Length: 116
Image (cartoon, rainbow, N blue to C red; front, side, top):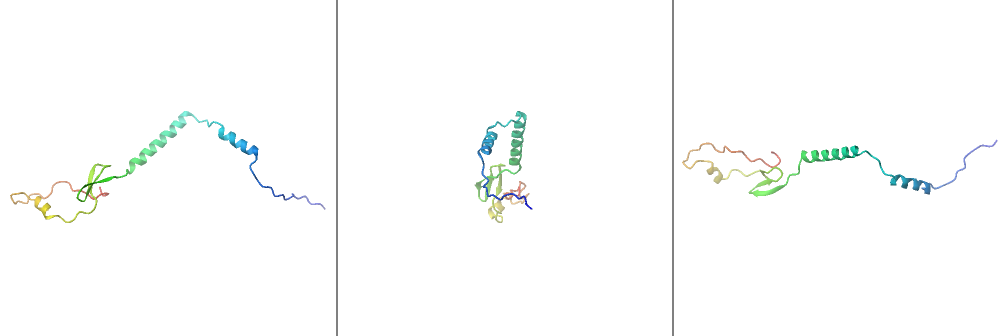
């Protein structure tokens, strides 16, 4: 009794000219999109980029004096490294000339960079 089977032929699957021409036609065809959708997409990308940049701006430090640096992003000065123990000269400047101790330093303290 005869059996119907498919013949096994080894054909290489290649892109035919018809497939290539269809692909070129699809690429050359203009992509139609409403102007409001393009505008909305551009605005969404712009707002997202702005929000991402404002969240954590890059800090740029320039030397100020001593161990202090100036953060050009915020305009604030901070210590680059932990300052050494109080200098005797600085301790003497905290006291009044007449010898009374008064209030030591009532001004704001300068933080370490990154701990603002």
